[in-house]
Length: 327
Image (cartoon, rainbow, N blue to C red):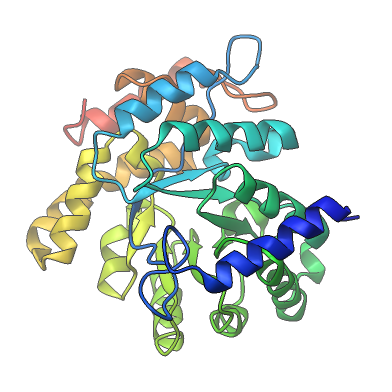
């Protein structure tokens, strides 16, 4: 159950949220926070003995801080959050907040399987410095996660969250898409500010933008592979794993799209497709971390049961970068 101290924090947070017009909560009178821009989903570095390496985390953040990102996503899928304890998840977010400049938004993954646990984690993430909570769809009982169940879940979380909530749909990992009708309903909630959609269906992204156009609601692409297409149908940014290694290039693609330089944007997008696929769908987090090692960051090992790449996989990964001129 939520203890008295947590409930007290919830009430205090909601009071601040409803009255605040500064910081991460409000963006002008009566408006929700603006989440537009590019965000790298930060990886969690581990030592050889599988402990969280907070020193390497800070080193990576200092290097990534040289790029014009809007902020950082912490404890998303690329942060291996299912493999961390609750205390580790909170400590990682706390360390990131201490390292980041205040003008960088910190979106913290707070999703858990139950609504109650998600509320508790969201409140705790706010306490350690998150500006907004990115809440993945609960999925273990995905056969029962229909629109009604998900609307109830997110509404309860948003009602009790002291910080804004970003919906997170990642069907490759959860086995379910957050239904469009649920997104449209949830977009009307005053504390739900947008969605990160990682499904790669640009038609769906465009439809969400269209159907929520009367709401103060924003859509972030969940991958650099379809970033240009997402901007073309109305998305306002992206949470891109590839930005952990090609940060300048992903930010350049953003600028080209926003300034209408579509021919140059198309050429750059084409060169990012294979590397992006390599560090996401093809080789996943082990591939991303290996690439980080090549580009001067600390990637290091994943936590078991994720395994490092084989020699053949590593060679294929390298080819996806060299053939596009990045290595």
